[in-house]
Length: 589
Image 1 (cartoon, rainbow, N blue to C red):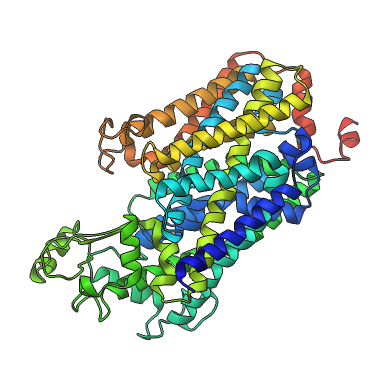
Image 2: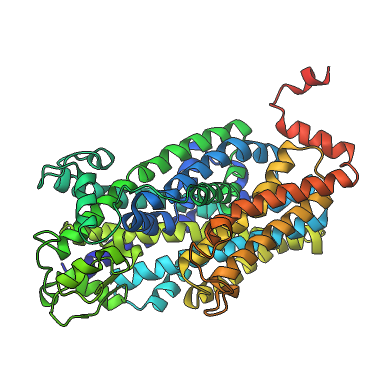
């Protein structure tokens, strides 16, 4: 059987599974549509939350980013993982105890303000729409490679599948579909990693193999990797970073941005009790750890395999001839995600760091006129089985896993958008007397509209995926996270303070990002070059979400202290949210 039909078999079988679950778990009420009826088991919710949280960015992009940048890019690993821990410890149980459907629900009621609810709805939609672009783009990449269709066709197929189980199933259908998607994506991620770890180190456990011995050279794997990349003018894979402030702020921005992502938060509203929310958080962390402990090993081994492919006899020897390149390079060239330009017309592929001035004399001595191979970071995980010459069925498994990762998060994001429009905007602000039947119709129509918008933006992205994702995390960090934290842990912050804080946080972050990445990501409209020497105090646009959060907190407290205190019943509400069940009587006395 050809590789194409093997891919079709794996992907097609997973689609049939998702659609079958959607038919079985069709939502019959608004409670089932928004929170799956509120009766999801903690283990089930933990698995679904893990799938919802581990997006195409985690499955496809993260290992590629770490493979390219080494230790310096481990901030993604630390930030996203730490963000989930913050969410599990500081937000999830309290929001579940509050007992509402959505994040704007909590903000609107806690800050006793339609204005606060409306600002939260706007922030939620901005965050979710920008983040979903990356998921649709990731699905397009996976489809275009593995099903041999155009990127545009891949995005339309992804939209159709999400429509099939999200619009009709709501949170109920999405929950059980995400359980299946988690199983698919974690098997797809770990099996190739085990194969590759065995090949390179003889250890079947990837995270241990990364710190083990490289079989062929007898050197520690990371030392071997440091050696080969430095021989090509790149920084050592394990090299430290100079700008510690930016690394700290970037990690913090990813952490609090992750903790403020609304599509993950709403998953904790689906369990029956507060205790179940805590157990869900614990189970989710276990399920996430399976992938996140494997990702650094996948990254380091993929980088070494890539260098060995181009320089089979070592970086000091001749590179492979272009005509003798392996089949996987030819295949990925067709997608445009690998590009070759023979700058010195020698028929060989020279891959090195041509931006390193100190390496220029060595390159000139070898007759090299510039780097000739451009490899998109997003293909590292997807191409890993082919680079390592693994069996065809492993490649098919990776295809199904990559698509599952993109679809699971896209569905969660689209549900967050739908809930914000139908429940928080239409039901609560525009037409409080709307019937449940009409609210369900509004929810499904808004979900459909969100899918169409996400598809269009995926086809016409307003910038590179990394730029859009940076904005999504920055918006979440600077707007919703501070409002949620102050809503739970401060009785003094009032509606005026909350609204002012969210507006200042989200506007300052957006402006800073646009100054360096272009206004609304339109090429050529940036005010400053996106280079470290141009950054304000050395803070990159991706890291500014943490500064936006600080501004949010400061403005919210300043305005609240300058205006009237929240009503007594609101202060009592905050106290009750933080009080464990059964402790109320003791506190009252």
